[in-house]
Length: 267
Image (cartoon, rainbow, N blue to C red; front, side, top):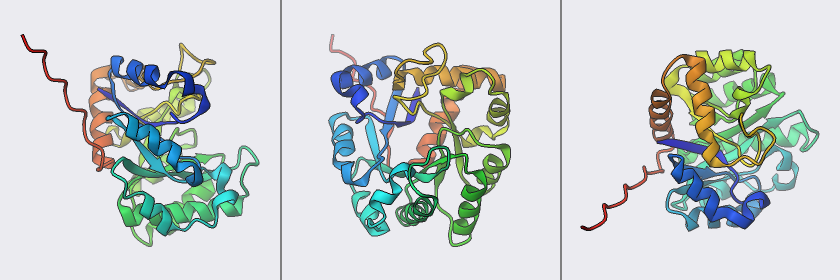
């Protein structure tokens, strides 16, 4: 079994065939999905998707691109919404300097707010970081000094220092289909060297479909290709990757429960 801990099932790309998307994930051996919030004010849409399927969970949070829109939402509101039984994570939140969506100051404020919510609830923070390694690490170290909190660097594309220092702070690192792309040797080396008990896999669907689907709409079933790439990079079996990343997921996402095996048909 595999887990896709970061996808966006509420996005319009999936509206016409959401049942099919979830069914194809199950058929591919992806037993648990987490659909990720990008705007707290649209959290109801994310929660509705999670409530619709027994093995789909969700998060609550504000993507850094939307940080300026939701600075008035305090950690206490995130904590309140996180009490819902289907909410297993906080975020995604963090820093993204690649695009000019969300001012750096607002992103940093939102990042700290979400860290406070993760620390209080004990739910892992889905951290989005892009082209912001130094500032991300500075905030992580600053906040870790105030008290540990569970978190994962999702869809990791940063440098070695941030990844390894995050592991030292107790965080996990997640890899997406990007590791299957050409000219990602440096990222593949990081994926090889992060301790296996700190690695997760994801799709970030509908974005970043792995080879052989690159350029197409990504979906949770395709996480099997990312896991296969990770196995090749590390020189281990795909079964070992599936076992480790699934164990890591349930260790970190303590509210999520493994899927219940279907009862055998009566004879």
